[in-house]
Length: 288
Image 1 (spheres, one colour):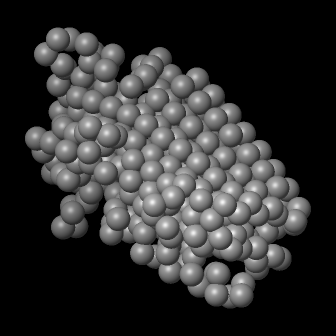
Image 2 (cartoon, helix red, strand yellow):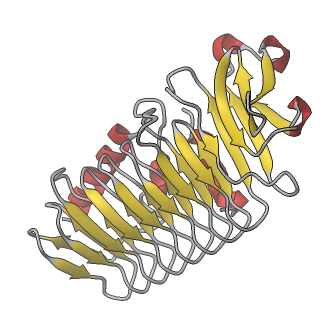
């Protein structure tokens, strides 16, 4: 049974997201700071080293399934269930019934939690957790620890909580219903690859937007503090481009003087309310 569960999760991971956040996954193990087809997931994060001791499955809707206190594997096949990891470095896997909502509690330990097709309410608990949203709408709480959280394809709301978190919004490009991402307390690293509102909260935070053309409205950096926060734009090195001078990057203030936007080759890629007065040299540029 454990082999079937592992194969199922790896298959879901390969199909759900696709190379913009590949670097995020690689850096997640070292930074410690808190598209579907273009954002691949490193499957090693879905199956931490060593097989899980338990293969615990929520057999039907309405079930509550609890970990054993070891490093458990808990799976939701049907949706509308509750999974409690408890102590240990647990893995909680979401279900495939897109018409229901499941609730996941990681508990103590460095947990890996991944939603499937369901809507979900996710709590990482105490520890450095790795959480990934799925195809349903999710509300995700990293809680305490230096967490790494990826939103799913649908619109999600993310709270990093206490710690230096890395929060990655894939977004849907829908300006009427953006991802909402809150860093909380700590020096957080917030990324937007689609339409999102990013709130760093307390601490010296880093805000990164990806310069792409499919986003309907640029992500909004809602609480930028020029005294301690950093703005960064990642630009796709398409067709082998290796020089930032090949791109036209400019900063334009809002017409009412209350903020500024960053443009790349004529596309607005970041909006910064309260960012009036920022200059191009205040924005880090990076080829990816």
